[in-house]
Amino acid sequence: MTGMQRYDHARMIEHATSQASLVTRMTELKQGADNAIHSIAEIWQQHGSNAAQECHAQIALAFQQVFDTINRHGSAIQGASQNAETTDFGAAAGFRNI
Image (tube, rainbow, N blue to C red; front, top):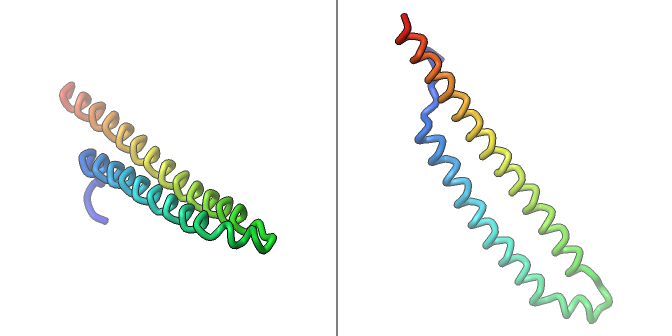
């Protein structure tokens, strides 16, 4: 990579916003999966199985892990953007004093 790497704060915010949209869409998908399981849960229960509860638990765990990862990523982007902005302001102030 040549030159100095600079953070594009607007693009970082746009990326974080798109991540929020992704979480919304994934929440809809999770609800769809829960509804699909619920629609056949009675059949499993008639056969003495608790598979519906197990499926709900596994789906909840999987989606929560994805949501946690996305949230950590969003927090990291926000922190990096704030740190870069602080550094940029500090550098600009230093140059003004020269």
